[in-house]
Every structure is written in structure tokens, then in C-alpha cells.
Image (cartoon, rainbow, N blue to C red; front, side, top):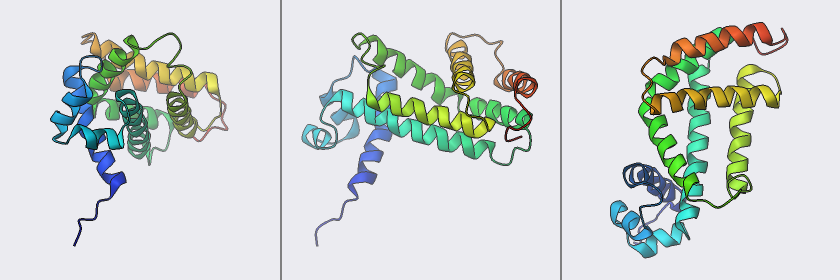
Length: 192
């Protein structure tokens, strides 16, 4: 009897393993052949699921976005106040610091090797940005794109500070401060 393969699940497993390969070698330095070797699959199998390294990376970014949003919203579930939600966000960042620093390194390496505005015009990355923005809308209970962009920039900035070795950054403390600022700024008709 032939082996039944869940192609979508297998593709996701390959993507999960690619994260570590990109973190170890960098986007620009690793070839599809090296990725296939690292995954223990043939290059033909790899190309069957991912027609190019860029396509592989785009699918990885999409998968990471979905996982990030789900995990962050799950971490914030049950928060009764905006302050509690921001402190939960801080704990989430602390618990996943190594992952976020690795992903930031990978993303920066990828961006360095793209031409012009190819990232801004990429439909996958645009979609991911909308998902992250929607998660912020859900957390804050307001549909304010400027505020969502601010919160996302704040979180990315904290991760970059950690990446640069700033040991004074305390995710929980910084997110708690953001919670106080947002509580004072937001109208009373938000989720909290």
C-alpha cells in the first residue's frame, strides 16, 4: 500500500527546519542545494515544494507570521486590562527572545539582498503586515493604523535593541510602560 503523504503538513515541517538553516547560514549564503542537504531531502523534493529560495523564504515568512499572531494572541488571552495585555506581551517577548532575535537577523540578511522596493511591493509581505496590524487592532480594540504601526515599531525596536546587545532593555518593563501610555491615550471605548 502506498504511503499517504499530507503535502501541506510536510511543507510546513520543511519550513520549520529551514528557519534554523537560515539562522545558521544566512539567507544570502545558503543555496537550495545546501538547504536540501540540511533538510535531508533531494533538491528535486525541495523544488517541488518551493520553486526558488525566495519563494521558500516568502512561505517561511508567511508561516512565521501566522504562528506569531496566534501565539501572541493566545498569550494575551484572559487579560482584563490593557495594562495586563501589555505585560503579557512583555512576557511573551521574554519567553521567545532567542527566536525573535534569530528571525530579525534572518530578515535583515534577506532585506540586504533585495533590490529597491521589492520588499514593499511583495504581496506576501504586504499580507503579513496586514495580519500583524490586525492583531494589534484586536489587542487594542481600535482600528487605528497609525497606532498599530507605532505598537509594531515599538516591539520591533525592542527586539533590535536586544539584538544590538542592549542589556538594559527589559521587555516586561518596557511593555508595561507602553501599557500606561496607551491607557492614557486611548478612548474609553477600546476593548479594555
